[in-house]
Image (tube, helix red, strand yellow):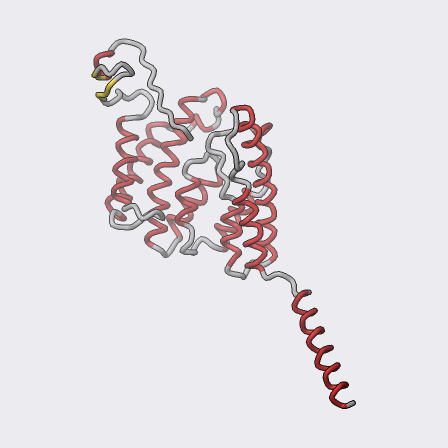
Length: 274
């Protein structure tokens, strides 16, 4: 009888412990991974799309990720001292509308401003910020410049400083090119001295090559090599610059040079299957 009672007690204790583990709330890291998985799944349609379907998918994907960005931000604010806080904030701003798609199609990014505020205030010394410096340089939001300047000035990590320096130069140059293409939409930014801003962009890229040339970007590329590419684009491929000569075969197999068409209107169509 005692053995039976002891067995029942052990079984009850086991079931109680098992039930307690099932009721245990997910850790911050587990919550982050769940959101990250959902975000990654939103990036692919899983099938070949027509142009109309692709446009619809882009809008839905952006809106879905914007909703997830709010959840990443909430997670970071709930666990500000947890190691996943900076990762969650980076995910909250990872979607960069560099195309840029109209708000009517992709929705409004409501998490960006607050997320960058927290990154600059609480995590600017993190060694994880290099990829974010690189990514936001292709965007247009004012928070990107503030973040890049803060990372360059305050990060204790040479690789992060190098990446911020290089891509702040890229950001400023990229923004100037967009201004040249849509002046009527950005009257406020056009008040800046264009030549002064262009010189600053060039100086930053030169500084990146000179001071941080041996540092590595997030993908492993040396800063000096990327700075060289960026400087060539700034000096030779900007709006108003004379296009470098190219030589190739046309669709009929005939060799030609771009300079052969000097004085004529030429359309260069760069395309891919993506």
